[in-house]
Image 1 (cartoon, helix red, strand yellow):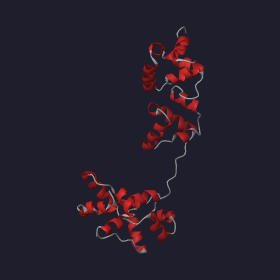
Image 2 (image 1 turned 180 degrees about the vertical axis):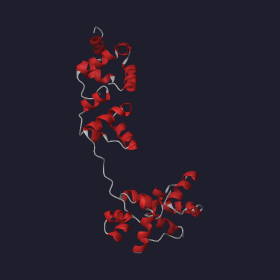
Image 3 (image 1 turned 45 degrees about the horizontal axis):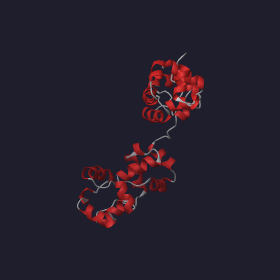
Image 4 (image 1 turned 30 degrees about the vertical axis):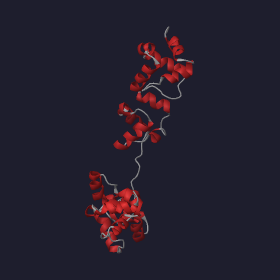
Length: 236
């Protein structure tokens, strides 16, 4: 659908084109493009409104108006990206407009009393305690970083400043999954011997996934084949 066809379609819904946030809610219910797609097509929310003959939000602000706006919405004066997302959804001036009035973003924050967010500092003991307390929620680096963000915990990168991979797995009481030696694999297989010896590669992989263990291909790589690995473990 080209821009002209889209405008014709939007004409029927233009009473709902107020703020981007309101439009997003409405558009979702009727299967129309959200504000991000419309802005990408027309350059800005105000430009879209102009094309539809709708009144546009003021784009010229006095210093007094800017100060009133940032005070009213001070909880969203954090980073420029956070503000710009909020401003776009509520038809407010962008961070660049605020900076023109205050000279720097730091001055905007200072004006509303929002101090720069500082990253927490940790001791080695803090990190160790966090790992122990959240061990069941530590599966891999990617999953941990998502969990850490949701729970305001240190990222994997931060943890690695204090402990290497092997130390982390020991604290978590979990098996290593990378940099495994043949001895590591033998120890793991013996610990799960009953399942290991009776499993096909596919069945082991299901079990390994559920228990955070190395896959059958890792054994294959170190022992030459899956059956060879099982033959090594069998007499032990």
